[in-house]
Figure 1 (cartoon, rainbow, N blue to C red):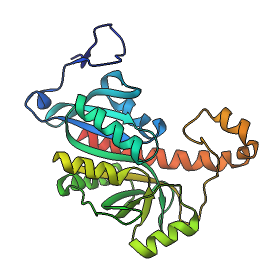
Figure 2: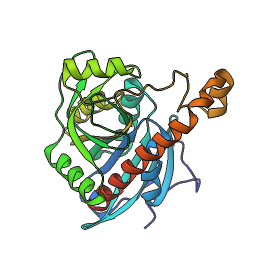
Figure 3: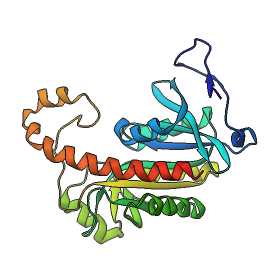
Figure 4: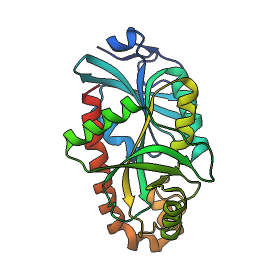
Amino acid sequence: MELLRLADGGAATGAATVEVGPKEEAGGGATLILGALPNEVAGVRRALSSRKTLHLDGLRLDVGLVEGPRGPSTVVVAATGIGRARALAAFERAAREFPPARVLSVGFCGACRDGIGTGQLVLGEPLLNEPAAEVVRADPALLESVRRAAREAGVALVEGPCVTVNVIASPGAKRSLFEHSGAIACEMEGHPLALASRARGTPFAALYSVFDTVDEALPNAAGLGTEPFIHVVARRPGILLAVPGLALRFMKASRALTRALRAWLGAL
């Protein structure tokens, strides 16, 4: 089945004619997976069959099929960009084009307490905000489906509050977040996506993979992870000293997240 039929035969820049899986034809809606950076969702993109790429006002959407126990279903994957505003804008654009049946926020996070290592998965429940604001609960059924997928994938999973922050947290800030809010991990997009999903009546969950442990600090280099690495190095050559450690963290965090997500998609 060809999922997208595009008028120009290639990637679309606006609306496209979409052919969807049987469950979506019955009104089930698509599965929407949102990560901040392309490398956080790259493994999921590769898992889609009949994958096509859509570009909507600068947002790349990868749309494809996954084969589950009840037949094929449609999955939409997007890299939103870092931060609340970018994530929310991407969610609204994607949800208009592909009304979702469920939303999963994914990506890398920082641990906020001891005992959580790089590559360990964090299932956010509930979703908190910094500064303090409304607490949002994840969907119970969606949480359970992610738990099962992690078990099947053999990936370590810890569950607890995740807090959305505005800047990358230092080791001291991460410990403070745990002490004051109980958050076991921090990231930069989950809370607004949870609020937006709840406003639509759409089940939401958040699954993150730990990149930096509570006592590890990330390099302070503008554009790291969002710009071509050579541009970052040109501005701050000293970042090269951190490359081996960053590469190892990335491989651990990415491998665990991709394994769990592929197991989860296979059970849809």
